[in-house]
Structures are given as structure tokens and as C-alpha cells.
Length: 435
Image 1 (cartoon, rainbow, N blue to C red):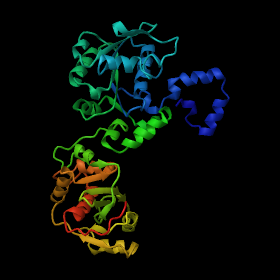
Image 2 (image 1 turned 30 degrees about the horizontal axis):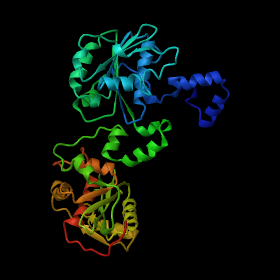
Image 3 (image 1 turned 30 degrees about the vertical axis):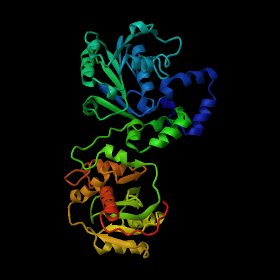
Image 4 (image 1 turned 120 degrees about the vertical axis):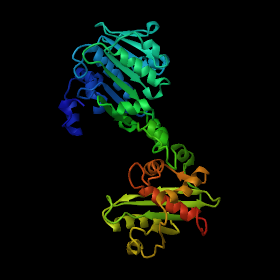
């Protein structure tokens, strides 16, 4: 937002705007520096690449188009002087034209009529009145970038480029005009090596734009139908939240396996347990893994909830575990006692003496305990009734060293105890109940 309004609360801002003349309000409605969110404006500093990672409809295309406009016109906040030659590189020429130039948020739409550049489709070229020129290129044809030279570039959907390494290299050789050639990259992220290198490069500034941040400019139906449907899933976290999700090569679970296990809901359960992996005494941040799971009449297991909690006192996680037990009308509360011995069951009974606690003790390492459960997933015998992002990150980051992304896998441990109790040991089957 424009600096003079940053410190105003909504009522003060509304009162200020109400006093402005209509022509000023009309100008503000078109002025990008007034409308843009902070992450849509060029960052400060001596950067070479501005990497915008965003979800679908997050506003990254508008940010890229406005940046090119600001560079071509030499606008304050973008460039100290107009940049005469700019490269526009899309996944294909059709994408470059349809999204970057002619799209709803493309270059033609972000200019007022009196400053709009001349679009010459046959020459794949935009020309501003001040002489600045932007040319379109396809990342599918890296050789087309051999020869031309530019002072700035906009690369769109880099993570989708079929020849990403080759096209990116040719673009870098072409950026040789002016004192400080710069480029903006707008893309929904995918785990490709080039993107990982760019994120770690010393002169890269990274901006993240989840779809939800642009909700005011999106159709309510899209938010309800698409955002609601895919929230928390791998596809949603990539395409809506702009996250880069990778698999650990030596992990027991893969993202694909977890996605295949996902269902919208659970059927009637034959048995339900809530498993608790208590924090180690004096351990880090007292994270307690709590997972509810059930088994259906056909023998398929279902993960029903991840209620993991970070708490300073045992009474807090015990209360959370008992609440889950009551909510799911579970048959038992399974608790690992390696860390706390009889104290674990005692703390739970202090919260609710009527909760049946099944104590389990780990005699093998985390990896060996988890292998049979991962095998059940591979066989299609475990489902996730919804999305559990933090739990799923632990599953797909869990390696032979017993950690998940360098941390203790508290959620995974609780899941393993729950599925083990339901599917890998003696199982009683009381009357069917509905979740």
C-alpha cells in the first residue's frame, strides 16, 4: 500500500478516501503502487533475480507485468531510467502471448490507454512511445535467445519449462545491456534443480504469494470449489500455496503414495484408537504427537485426525489426547511409555480416569517400527481421511537416521503406534460406529 496510508486503520483509511475528488480516486484505482501488496512490489537491495513463487491466481502475473511496465517507462521504484530492451520468455510462444501480453493481468491490460505499447503480434514485439521494446521468446526454443541482448527480462512459469536449464542459460548470456541487468521470474513452484539453485543464489530475492492472499480479486466460486477442495493436499500446497514439496530419496513414504491414500472422508469404523507419543522429559519444546485412526469392516485403516500439540506441561497434551478420545468415541488411548513410564498413564488418568490406556513400549528403532506401516500404505491398506500437511511432511521426510527433515518425527511416531495397534497386532472389533 502507498506509504501515507500504511499507518491508518480501516475506518481512518475509508474516511481519508471519502474526502478525495473522483478524479483522484479514479487514478488510485489504476495506480499499481497503491493497489499492490508488499510482496508484489520490487524488493530493495542489489538483487539480480526477483523470484516470485505463487499459487494459482495469487497475483504473480500482474506483478511481473507491472514490473516490466515500470522498467520500460523508468518509473520510480522500478528503474532510474527506462530500460530500452526487455525479454519476455514464456513456456511457449502461445503462453507468452496469451498470458504475458494479452492476458487479463498481462502487459496490455496494466497500461492506461495513453501509455499502452504498440503490440505487433507478427513480430512478437511490444514498443512503447519512448522507444523501449519488449520481445517474446519461447523457452522451448533456447537458441532463439542466442544473439539478442537485453537490459531486463521477465521469465514466466519457469518451473514448467521443458528445456529449463538450456533456456535459462541462453537468457543469462543475453542480459548484457545497462549497468545492472535484472530479471523477474514468476512461477508456481515445482521441485526442479534450477529453481532450487536460484532460491539459494546470493543475489536472488524470493517473494511468496499464496492464493489466499489475493482472495479479494478471485471469484467466490473458485475459492469454495478449488481452494476448499485442494487445501492441504500436495497439489494444493504446490498450486495454491506456492510451496516446493520434495521427496527424500531414502524415505519410507513418498508424496505419490500419500496422495493415492487420500480420501474425502471415512466410512463406519469397526475400531478407533488415539495414539500418543509423549515428549521426552527435558526435550525440545515438548511436542506431543497425537493421532486418531480407525479400521473399517473391510480391514482398511484410516487416519482420522492429527491432534499433535506443542505444550509446556503434561496436563496440556493429556487433555488434548483425552478430548480426541472422546470426540472420536475411541476404544482405547495408546500411549508410548518409553519416555515417561507409568507417569504417562497417570497423567492421562488425572484428566479422565475413565479412559482406557494401552501402554506400548518401543523395543526397536523408529525406522524398524515404521517399515511395516509404510508397507501397508504401499499395499493401499491405509487411507488419509482428509489432508494432514505436517504429518505428511514428516512421513515423506523420514529417513533411516530416525529423523524427519532433521527433527524428531513426533506425528509419525503417533501414527505408527495407532496403525500398529489397529492392523499389526491382536484387534478386537466392537460394534460398528459412525465417525
